[in-house]
Length: 182
Picture 1 (tube, rainbow, N blue to C red):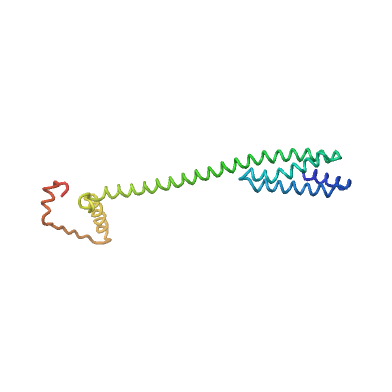
Picture 2 (tube, rainbow, N blue to C red; picture 1 turned 135 degrees about the horizontal axis):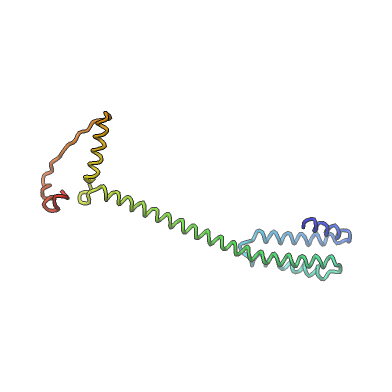
C-alpha cells in the first residue's frame, strides 16, 4: 500500500499536484498517528481527526481529475475504518482497564484471605500446644520436647536434667478445675 501511495504521489507530481497531495497525505498521517496514540478517548480523537479529514475528502471528491476523486473515495474509506477502529480501541482499552482493576481487587482479596488463614493457623497451633488455663505449653509439647532431648542425650549430643517442682496451693486448682486441668 505504501508503494501505491508513492505511485500516486509520483503521478500527481507529473500533473503538478504533488504539493497539495503531499500536504493532504501529511494530514492523513497526523490523523492516523492521533488515532494510534489516543485509544482511551474516542470522542476527543474523532473531534481532532474528522474535521480535517472531511474537508480533505470534500476537496478531493470535488476535484477536477479522476485521480483526485479516487483518492477522495479511498480517504473516505480510510476515515470510516479509522472511526470503526477508534470504537474498537476505546472498547478494548476500557475492558483492559476493568480487567486490571478486577485483578488488583482479586489479588488484594487473596492477600487478605492469606493473612487471615495464617493468623488462624497460628491460633490453632497455639491452642494445640498450650494450656488454655495457664498459657503454658501443654503435656503433649512437654513430652515431645523431653523425648527429643532424651534422644539427643542418648546419642551423646548433650545431657538432660529434669526438675520437678511442687507448687503450694496447686491442690486448689485441681479441686476447682479438676485433675485433668491440674
